[in-house]
Length: 341
Image (cartoon, rainbow, N blue to C red):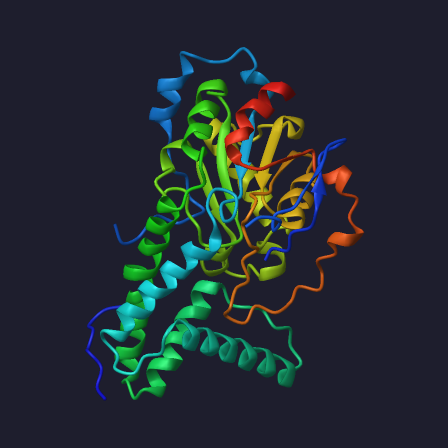
């Protein structure tokens, strides 16, 4: 079989969490082709301008609001599945015999295991690839196994990731937004016009890609940063590691135009679906935390060979100390923040 030649080029576990003094909520109880760097700012000056005139009297009580994305603003499963299928369809149309999604996941596991074995043989530390790099590497290996010339293999797979996977993820996220998301952000911009709003995700989700960019001042993706930053490695880049916090502080200072700005962490709200990667992470620098537990959303399990994270120990956490409130939807957030104010 021959390949079409291209001339150019790239889990959270949920546990039962309870309000302080409230009832337990269980997550599982119920049923354009590229974007700017995820670590760059997405200006929302128009949103600020339109809302500043109707500022709430409580606006000064909250200075920063950050959000996780996957399983917080949209369900991860159908969104990633759509992106993976778009990538596979793109490659299959150009590489005869290219595997389906399950097959690519198996190649991802193989690539990961080979790198781990190589590190062990060399007695060096294994640094995991980003999921983006891992998928491209797996697609390349699959293409080579089908007899695709190396130059064509990397061209098709890399372009497929950018032309197909990234836009499909954004479109699927926009299509699967949880109820009340737009209303939530409109209210936040109206009630807190001077607050800096950002996204902090371990994955490759993008608020801008999902049509929410106008509400956000900055976005930080650990997975994107792993490829963008030399010497940055998994255990520090991903929440609950503090890379995202440090980058958030840098971006807030840039937005405010003050490189020495002191951040009042008691006026920082972080919203996310994961006890460790969101609540423990945010409490480590003193922010208030809101756990989002959407009923019926099954915890997403990456099928590309992500090893079990033995560092996660939810059962040993004192949840009442790291979770300030639990909501069934971000749509409930504006009312909660009014009560806190």
